[in-house]
Structures are given as structure tokens and as C-alpha cells.
Image (tube, rainbow, N blue to C red; front, side, top):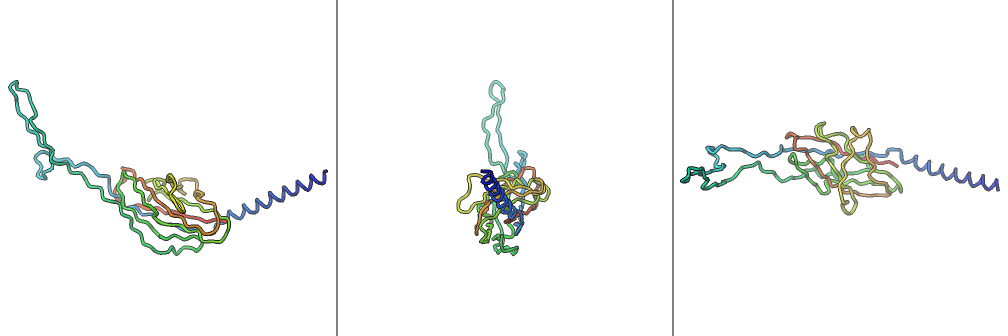
Length: 223
């Protein structure tokens, strides 16, 4: 009986050692790529104010008369139009070419440029793809942005919806490497060759001034 117990215990230790050895294989970084996210920000629109004597033709006119009781009465108020700064449609501009970095991790874009207005949220469907190109049967893919946007507004204002065939129910804010303890998020544990479409959702604080801001979305493969 004691011998059987020792054999069973030894088998348990061997099983744990095998699992530990397998897990140790996943801590080695095999490849890493980055996609640069460039954001051209237009300042938030503000209502333009005009005096009644303005020559632009954009003002409020009111005609007043005094009735028999000498009380002030508004006969008519007409609104020509109020002019506000127009919000332009968001357009995505990106060069389409293979990412020259690495062979295990590949993106179809080196960079993505987003034109957006402060105080708005913009969704860019499948802004780029990330492909894990390997026959390894078990790997881990981590992702995140390296820093806040040019050190100005938070990097986690950029969220991702990363999927193979159909978008997930919600987008997830990116981890920010420099803000989140020098860590990236575990995106996926899988095996073989997989291609992920990445939808981007960008919310720009209304206080952000017009200008160009950037960060890098980083993808790292372990096995």
C-alpha cells in the first residue's frame, strides 16, 4: 500500500513538473510589432455670436411696439439662422502595405491616421488586421498602446474590438504600457495561424486642442 502511495505521489509530481515546463515555454517573447495611431484633432465647434448690426446676415431680428396701455409687446421675432462650425465627416487614411517587422506577427498596416473632432467618439471598423503566422499549437498574444497620445490625452481613450469573424458586443480600452505598470493585456490564447480584425473606437476629450497626436499599438507574441 505504501509503495502504491509513493508511486501515485511520484506520478503527481511528474504531472506538475510537465505542466510547469509547458507553462515556462510561454514566457519567451517570439515577436513584436507596432501599428502607429495618428490622430488629427479638430477643435470642438463653438457657436458663433453676432450683434444685430452684423453684416453677415446671421442674426436675430425682433420688432417691438407699444400697445394702448403702453406695455412693451413683441409683434414678431424672426430667426434668420445661427452659424455654427460644421463638423466634418471622419475619414481614415492609411497606407496599405505589408508590415516589414517580423514573420510570426504581421499587420496589413504600418500606421492608421484618424481625422476627428474633439468631444466626439469615432468608430473605425477593421482599421487594421493582426495575423499570427505560425504552426505552433499554443501561443499567447498580448496587446496595448505604449503611451498616452503624445503625452496629452489618455491612451485608453482608444478602445479596440478585436475579433476573427464577428465583432464582440463591446470594445475594450487599450492597456497603456507606461501607465499600467509596464504591462500589456493578454488578448488571446490560441494556436496555429489566426488573423484578427481590429475595430478602433476613439473618444477625444472636448478640451483637447487642435493638432496632431500619436501613440503606438503594440502586439507581442509568446510561446
